[in-house]
Length: 283
Picture 1 (spheres, rainbow, N blue to C red):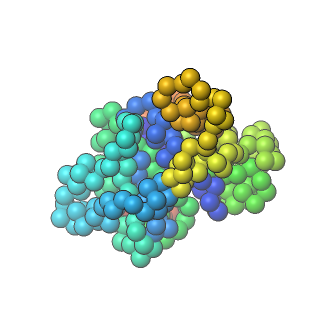
Picture 2 (picture 1 turned 90 degrees about the horizontal axis):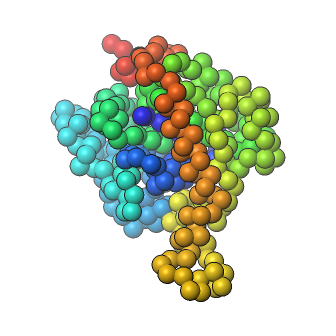
Picture 3 (picture 1 turned 120 degrees about the horizontal axis):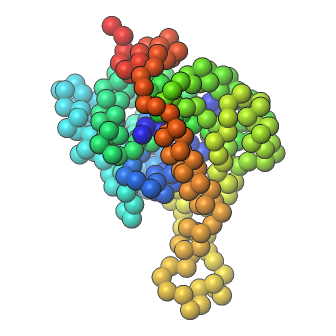
């Protein structure tokens, strides 16, 4: 299954949610950092700038030598304690334009991973930026438009929700994910406003989300919860938190949405930006 996470405007937490999902995915999964903004939120945030790992720019070089399929597995970075790996993104906005030629052939490699039993989560970032991964979004089995539930968030998501809704087809579901439901609008109100069903919501919990967005330590627990317990009481409490439960519930909902549709090829209205049904740029 290929899943694309994206936003219409602002920073509702696409990268944070993508990483949280990958770390709590029930099967093997690859998280692809395809945000065209030109900075790796994972390297700077979750890894706190302490990891120097090659990524998409190296794949651009490999593609020029027709070695993309061989290069991708070598560049995957395994996340300890999980079945997830990461393909890190661009390092500067200047690389975004060059990355545009990478998306169609990379799509074929990612589809190969999915067919072999490894799911793929694409962090597509903000839609419409120069070099954005339109082929990956157009060919995804499930496209998730993340937004906060306040007026600025909904206003930014509305036009893209309309565009993506035109993509709905068998094997290609388009859904909304709320980051902080009922702050102040509920899922039903959001779905009515955007014209796209709400698949699920991630709880608004900045301290917990900061573990994934900034590599922070898990929130501390009271001393009395640590008494007589073996292992890491803080980590156990974090995994049992309502925030992580909301992430797990979202992962399950995504899996069901992906299984609900037949994986058929379809003609995408995003062909207007150069993407055909096979994710390759037309001649």
